[in-house]
Image 1 (cartoon, rainbow, N blue to C red):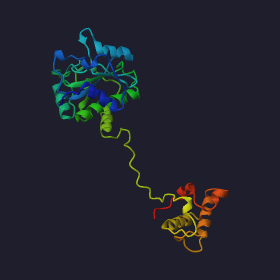
Image 2: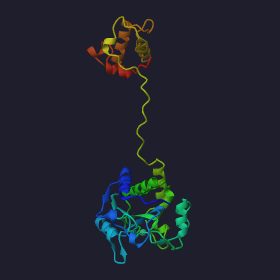
Image 3: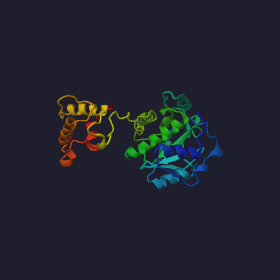
Amino acid sequence: MAKPISASKLVEILRAEGLTVHEVRNWRSHNRNTKGPWGPVNGVMIHHTVTSGTAASVNICYNGYSGLPGPLCHGVIDKKGHIHLVGNGRANHAGLGDSDVLRAVVNEAKLPHDNEADTDGNRHFYGFECVNLGDGKDPWPEVQKEAIEKVAAAICRHHGWSERSVIGHKEWQPGKTDPRGFTMDGMRKRIADRLGGKAQPPDPKPTPSKPSYEPFPGSGFFHVGQKSPVITAMGRRLVAEGCGRYEEGPGPEWTEADRLSYQAWQQKLRFKGKDADGIPGKVSWDKLMVPNS
Ligand SMILES: [Zn+2]
């Protein structure tokens, strides 16, 4: 049970979910609020349009038709997965449905079979019409199904609902068949995964642990007389790489044995000439990965 979302907030959360949102004409003030209550809202209902073509489908959902004035839903989900918002408030999409189903949605419990038409659904459900002929042959592109998943998840997240607050029209009103072409259980699973974070883009990469390698100290660091634990650590790595040219050590003081050992490392890296003079440069140093001393 919840207060209906505002038009601006709806646009915001859909875009935040990564959806392309089109605002159709005066959708923000287009509704059937003079004909009955809107809210508290309890769930999201998915439909198919039994139409083809985005423009025609969006028009009919905005305007309605003789005997059923628009808006016929809140948003149309086209075959490209774009969302066309056509109504904000009470919309003619759900009709009369089963009070037991509404109770299950409110409680986010297992859905009973819909066998009654005793409750005003237009008051309680957001409605999304998906462009599809509903003949069981018209395909449902993956981008369209993904958009259904995203729309439903965005609204559920906003209200603190689970995937169990999302139903198909056919689960609400006896005699309805929509949506046809995928199962609502499968769609709810996708929504649950998205809400659980599994289907979301991966979290920002975990901060890499502080590199535990010695940064290159600069070529000028390596000269006779220099003494540092970095040189010992470097020497140990050179030995490990099979490049040790030490009689004894390695030790902390830079010696000719260090230079010869480092030269062997540069040669191992296929450096030539001046690049293999035994004085560490940044490229070869970084490849050696000298542990922090
Ligand atoms: Zn329907």
